[in-house]
Structures are given as C-alpha cells and as structure tokens.
Length: 269
Image (cartoon, rainbow, N blue to C red; front, side, top):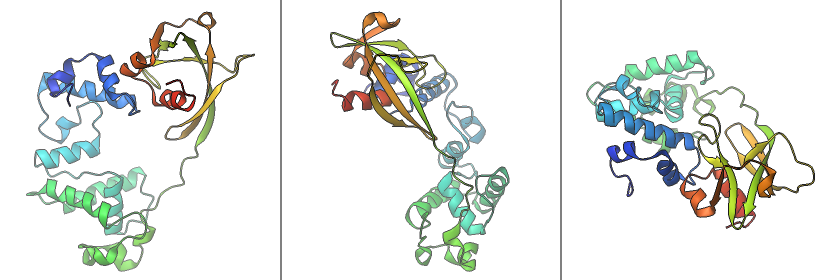
C-alpha cells in the first residue's frame, strides 16, 4: 500500500517490482493474478455485479459473490468452505459436500434464504456464524441464533456434518537443484512463466542427484505434495546460470518461499 497506493499504480508497475513487494508471502501466482486484476480494473473500471467480478483474474465464485453482495447489493450467496458447513447443517445435507451435486444443492438452498434487501449483511453474518458458533468441531448449537431453524440440530447430526470424502493423499517428492555461489552471489535462472515459481529467479532444477556433491536438504509443503529440496552449491562452470544476484537483489525480485527457508536454515544470510 505504501509503494503502490492505487489500482492505477499497481497496474502500471513492472512485474518484478510486484513480485519483489510480495516476496516472502509465497503463492506467487496470487501476485500475478493481483497484478493482472489491477490492469483489468485500470482499463475497464470497477466491476458492478457478480458476472463482472468473475471477469477479474483470480476472482472465483466465492469472492465474486462476497463482493457483489457487499459492494453492489446483489442478492447472490458467498460460498466458501465455512459457508458450506453452515448451510449443510442448516439443511441437514448428508451427501459429501465436495461433489458437484452438493455444491449445486447448497447454492440453491443458500439463494433461497438470501434476503434481497440486505444480501451483503446476510453473507457476512453467515461468515461470522461459521467463525464463532458453527465451528468445524463441537458446534455451539446452544448459542446459535438459528438453532430453531437448523435441521441438523433437530436431528442431532450437526457435529457429523458436513460429510467429506476421503482426504487426498499427500505425495512426497525429492527435487534436486544446482545453485551457483561465488563471492556472496547466487547463480540462478529465471523460471518459465508457467508452472511452479513462474517467472521467479531460482536455482536450476536437475533430473537427479549429481555425483560427488553434497546437498543442503530442506522440506517444503505444497497443498498435496511434500517436497524435499536437495540444493547443491556448485561453481560457476557447473551449469548455465543466467543471473548472479546477492541475497538483497534476489529477495527484491521475488524469492520463492522454499529458498527463503533454505537460506535461513543453512545460514546464507
């Protein structure tokens, strides 16, 4: 907010500046989407309803519903995981919540309850209810202002809902990287614009462990993957490093969080 205080400032900023300001937060795709959304708003003006909000890069149905109802007064539900929990209990919905059929039912059920005159307040009330009362484990049904309307409370099933399918198994992977190191500078390449760490500076990803080299090993967790990063500090002529950056330069251009962990763990900074 200090560096780019308006949407126009953000829209016209260089990508490296945006990623540098985002540095340390991880999920750099969000920085890209935020930047693209600012450019869209700068060119087209602010959206004025649910379908307009969906046109912004990075904005999905939940965010669009929240913005359209709160800012534009449009009677559309805002459905995230917390809202799904509230409505599943309200309706005593006993099918797995993460299926297309369940999402369609919850969307229709929520829309039927939404008041046309105060949709934003209603959506925010559901958010607050999910956070304070209709919590995932041991819901506080005795304190709930909707207790007399809740089918799950009437049937004694609130604590069992929503039903979820079996969690996705976390996959463990070993990744090997070569990083140049010379006079306090790191030899790196710029990652492709698609895929993990898109457009950021990072060590070179190797096909496997190079013979004769000892790695620094650090774990990094993604949503459904646990990565063990093996980072080999190598000389300049080991690989075709395209950029040589000191820590401050690397950080200012957007340093992937995995390598922030590596540098702290192995005292490079």
